[in-house]
Image (tube, rainbow, N blue to C red; front, top):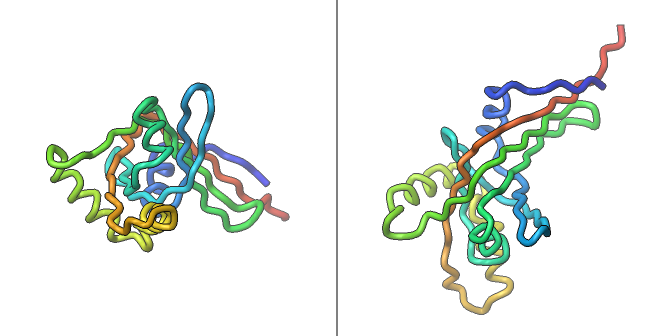
Length: 151
């Protein structure tokens, strides 16, 4: 297998065509990683969530990363890491940005599933408040694994 670096455009193309990633955040030198559904647009990743550990941690330390993979086989894959900053999108001051995020996310299959279903299993209150946030991408990198050619 050969491993090569992706250029910035290739990394952004991966973000544009994927919707499931892993969000990494930290608090008091303790890392936390959780799967998220997201939508990519320009220099942002948009996410629907509910209040919980990751939101509390990101409010305290907004420096985060998101890692995504596309795996065809053990020797044919791409992996991208986007480092950035968490920005919560509360109502009413971010109403237009929330509407934009909702529109982008609605184009994705099961965009709401992780956030709402997980929270509803832990609460008897079915009126769980959705929380939108974005991650402003500050740096991006990626790798591609390809099988070696046998001539």
